[in-house]
Length: 178
Figure 1 (tube, rainbow, N blue to C red):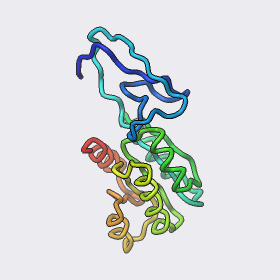
Figure 2 (figure 1 turned 90 degrees about the horizontal axis):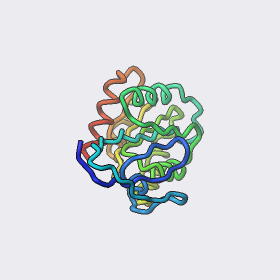
Figure 3 (figure 1 turned 45 degrees about the vertical axis):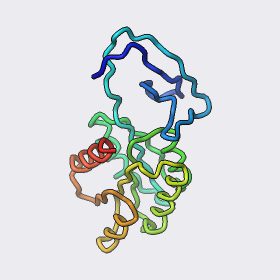
């Protein structure tokens, strides 16, 4: 914890958490509807905010049980999880990552479209200036595609049966090493 005499807080949409400098995204631009005000804290201890993780289901994949299990494990580990729901386009995922100011992204896919969708998602992130956010993948990805997926920039791939603790630790380590 650090001592602070002033804390910058954002007025945010319902359900979002307040915290230091949440008024600006990684791009440095405050999202529409956000305002900033200074609130005196008089030597209040400022604690680290929980990591903000986006969990998304790209493409036409409608199977989201695994994504929800992982999202709950991340939440139970103290992270703030934003779940986009099913059938998200690469652009929707990138916009959500930008506007939610996340530290990591988890993609869950079972449809077999990972070689088509992952590059489009990574490009959409780069186009918005947030290509440095670590991206992780889970679901059904054939062993023969693992190296290709990693080579395109996905930090880790976790299939069925992966211990939830391994996923939590990988995402925490990757998000905090940036």
